[in-house]
Image 1: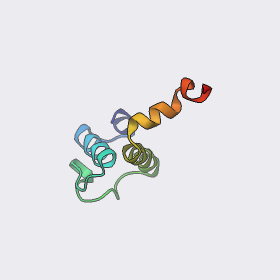
Image 2: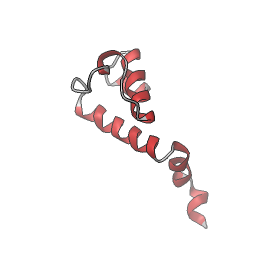
Image 3: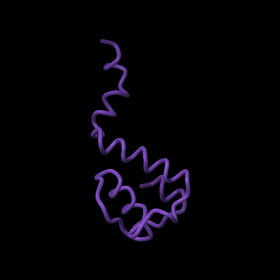
Length: 72
């Protein structure tokens, strides 16, 4: 959400976009309520990563990023 706000989104739109993507919900909040056409390409890329983390469960991603997992 903070990265989206740093990219120029207001707080409600950033929260709506991230919540929609991480939970794979339908509607968003703010400017992304109808669609994501007003979102720039880099932000869409970040939201795509959020979608992947949401589908794979965020804790699975964290485990894959820990060095202890790869030592075994």
